[in-house]
Image (cartoon, rainbow, N blue to C red; front, side):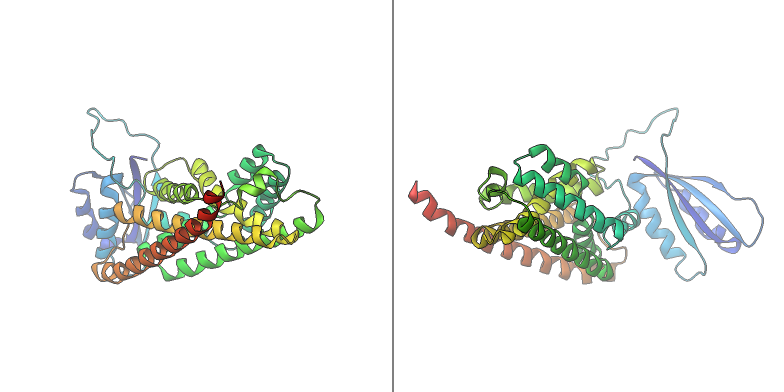
Length: 330
């Protein structure tokens, strides 16, 4: 999305304070609403590269004003006489505010999200018990746990405590619900716990860490660079939904050791997803607007990276400890 409209709704006395923001690279004045009533709408056409700076400056200028709003709308295409040739390969294509709005909506506990978790769990569980790979992929396309995962990572990056708490609750409820449904299905259904797809969730290896790291990086890039969210959702769901459903299925059949291995896989995936996603947000420059907020968030990011890294290292050592006897047995 190379261009977007930024609409600023302000009191008519504040219009002159923001008109000067159009005099910069990548920003042009698109229009001012007709002179009627106490408020005006000033519209800017901005490139993705210039949008975040514009939003930051607008909020700074209007900080002491009352009753102002900023709205962002997409632009399908911009045709010019001499098209711009900007190198935006390493630029964020979504503003901080757009990221927060998008993620906050998908990182909460709602009847719709819980229904999607239930459907995804049932389909994934049936796919694993019947060795139906197509059904497992279909369950992962739903990707109900992608929003809470990204919400927790973005919350740490921007210092949004409410988003962190909201996302953590949504993740905990979603995973707990998936495990509980798996337990019920494990008790009701008749299947072999040693079937190929189920056994794969009880066999944890270093390749699982690599997959989860890649999925976390892809999830963060899907927000900042506009990657295909459906494909990214599938990658994240590979790391979360099948292991969670498998834990419940194993518990339902009293396969305690296999349930423990599936829980280990889920823990490894969560730690790796958070670590790689946090690193991508850090590299891409996703950060709070004010300098004071950035200094406070910097400590939180360091703590998050340290905890995720140590946890992932400990889990990797545990995986290595489990694999040594198996390798010698071969």
